[in-house]
Length: 220
Image (tube, rainbow, N blue to C red; front, side, top):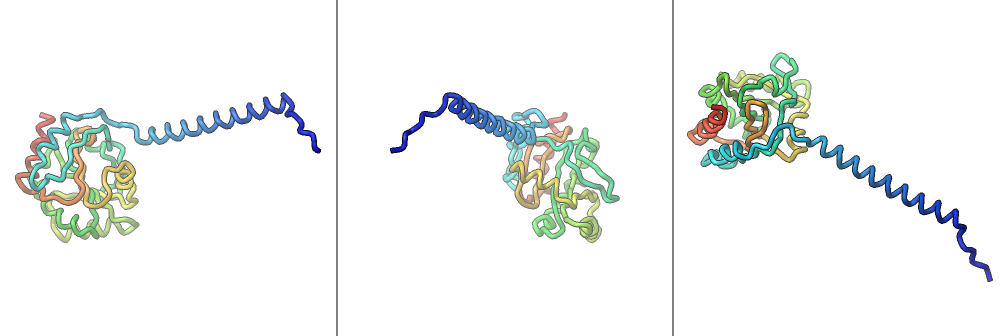
């Protein structure tokens, strides 16, 4: 019969120490992962529940799909380019409330929505407000495709801004703000989100104008 040897006291202590170190290491790794994930979603703006409620209550009829948010998401650092390829961010429009519309020339609902956005811009663009379209035709030829569409339709107040890397919209998808095109953000004068619309809308209507009036009223 083989004798069963009792474990040496020192060996038992080393095993316990090893197990403790592994558990502590896993805890640190999990905490770091959670912290980094939350850091990436850090709130850039204060929560603005009352302002978001004003936008949500104004969104009726043709704009019923627009949701007031105001949860603290901000887009001041969101990057894109102008028609000349110069780098820009939402912060370049600080001081203006914005209706940021993401579109692409291959997106049929986007194309159908553009005339109404142009009409709305013609009525309301000012020192206090702007319709800001951001094109998402990807690749090196993206700017040319977008410009051709805008020129073909002779839009008077829809300038070309674009992100042919799609990074701006990927940010919205990662934060579960929007999943498809077109998508529109309602931002205050600091680039803070007050509302989100997923899908197209008839902006050049009394319903659309009511949303813009509510937005402008917040800064009055």
